[in-house]
Image 1 (cartoon, rainbow, N blue to C red):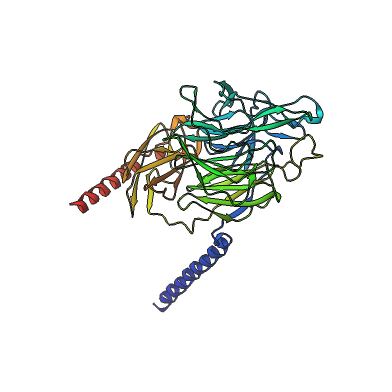
Image 2 (cartoon, rainbow, N blue to C red):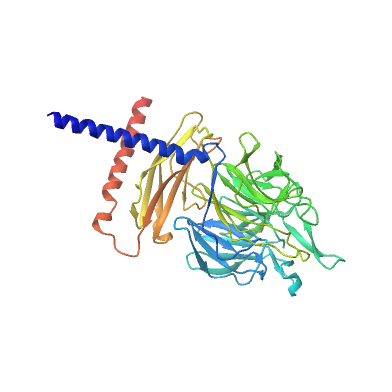
Length: 480
């Protein structure tokens, strides 16, 4: 009996020790981001160093397209998988181009505007012809096609996607001057493209004409940051304007902490992140600034490891990836050399200082479930203060779509529109002011081969439906 008791005591001591050590390790591992400013990790570099390219996430993969380096303008397309940390070469564009707008809608990537190059080896990286054509890359067929051209030819338009429509804002024309090179003419143009109807419409112009600006979307508003309004890349501006597609109106909001151009920009958790770029007083920088629309304020985040400009940035599953760029020189025919980069760095924002009033969760499917055919995604959501307006769902960091219901919500997913393999389901809810933290599920889609009997989600779905009914009954009981 004493031996049994002794063994139990030893077991309890071992468990306590493991828990204590695990806690210490957890504290040690997270200390680097406990300052609330986020943390950086270096990932596998892309195969081709470049700047002036497009970076976009689509269906869980990051695509790097076009740009330029010492060999001239590029048609190269390289795809990065954040999960495996590997790169893959895809079908190139019909021809090389740079300084274009880029975005993803559904399973297609849109490359709009930009420029070709002048002929002649001395100016192989200098823009020559502004473009208005629209190139579309289908990620499933790995193929390119042309759509209806944009009304206004321009380079460096910023693209924002709201409700499936693409807004092309700002940019520049190019004019030849007496010194035998082109200079920029800043534009305030605002044109919207409807991918369904393959048509364009002209909207209310931006307040401040500019080119090489950063454009990102938060809560269905389009934010245009910095850039240039003169003939060259100097001086940059820090002006920020927000556009509402609903009212077709513009407003000026808090300016960036520094006047910047050719920086990376993206959004995470209803905040704008401006990364690196060219600053008139400091040349290229590695600063990271975040804008919170709730209080109309900017603040500093942890600096990017690599100082650079002309890079691209995008978001997947709450993490920011900053890829490529240049760390010396300014792109023109007078630069002795540009130092192009293939650098790929991942930024994880800190969420410790965010107070959320709403939460959303996924009841079905479970983590690592195997899905096929038509599947119903189930979940619930709640709000502490305010009103629960909507629940949104996204697949592989694609565009957010509205689910059916709020406190108890559902969404019918046709998995045949996805590639067989690993995918991520994300869900969030909106409380009238901001969005809740994102909850995610990793799942596997398998449509090509027959599912085994053990893989069928019937029991799990029945369990989720039972949970649904219990929650609904409980809420009704509370109301009465």
